[in-house]
Image 1 (cartoon, rainbow, N blue to C red):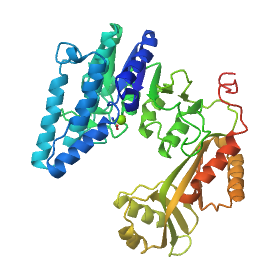
Image 2: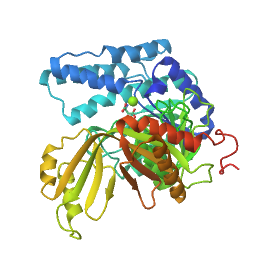
Image 3: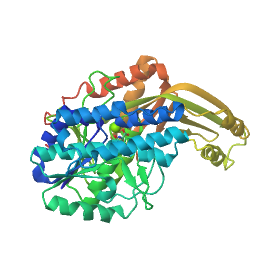
Image 4: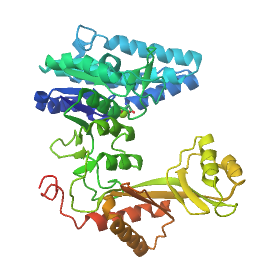
Length: 462
Ligand code: ASP
Ligand code: MG
């Protein structure tokens, strides 16, 4: 079997739903199980609706209801809603959603638990429409809520993790359908805990649902269908001639996800990594493009670098110990101060008496500064950017030499550098305002001289 996951923009309207069904039909022989996001921006609309109900007691479902009803009408499925089949409970779900919003508007309170329940409606509606459309085109399909597909989670609302028993429950739920030639169409993003409460796996979590299901079923492949041609060598908004990467390892893909290439959910790689199942990132708007294959082990590739990303709005904290050289416990003091405030540190570079680290600018650091000043002199610098190069660690000297040469030519001082021992990423800090120029120049140096992708240069194929 294979898992095919489609994100919100791939399901934004009736036309997109038709295209997705075409893509699925082409691969029916591989026994697909589908995992879907909510249609379009429905998850955001749901949050907005909750915001309105909380603030001024307004209950407005219009954009959400219109989007789904229009899709049904354009697909000719209006008559099927409310009748036996995947759309049987379509109206009752809308009703339930409305009641929940009324509840929020009356109590003027939205707990994490209620929020997860509210957000679940996007995915629950989209799978029903897709299953109904597949059925109407002659493909046997069944809409499944995550809990009917065996996905059990912990009770950590808004960031739940799948529980171990899902591994057995998922194939138990899906195999009979797959064996009978029925395509299961499963809600991504959501689950239920052991007490029956609805949970979500965090924004963008449908990718994770897909890889959890793929791992549990021992899938041949997990396909993640997006609205871009795969993982790109750089952000196309920054670098005009960014191009898709043909293959990356799980490690490389995970690094890219953490450092700003918002193609895959960072946690989504884990289930497939553990089981060695390849992940294929494809574009539902351009299904003929080869996409990016994420595989267990590296293969020979033309250049030393896979991709370059940058993340802006980063704060750099520079600490020099006020204690004597060689004293122990300094780093522990520093990191426990961050841990107590639940501030996550991204990059770290240390010397004998000083440490530099980076964090997202969102945190209020004044209190922290007070505490750190007891053990170190503290300098906090805002408006920085992390530039990350993901590439072949065996060629790190070449990558470093070329990168620093590029920065030197641009007249950009590199302010901090970090490279892990066995890691595939090299990161350094520059000013926010310099990041785009640096990424463009690096991209030009590392990629422009390489042959275009798909011309037999990929060692895996050669
Ligand atoms: N619909 C959810 C979101 O927008 C989950 C997902 O799309 O993966 O975050
Ligand atoms: Mg979405």
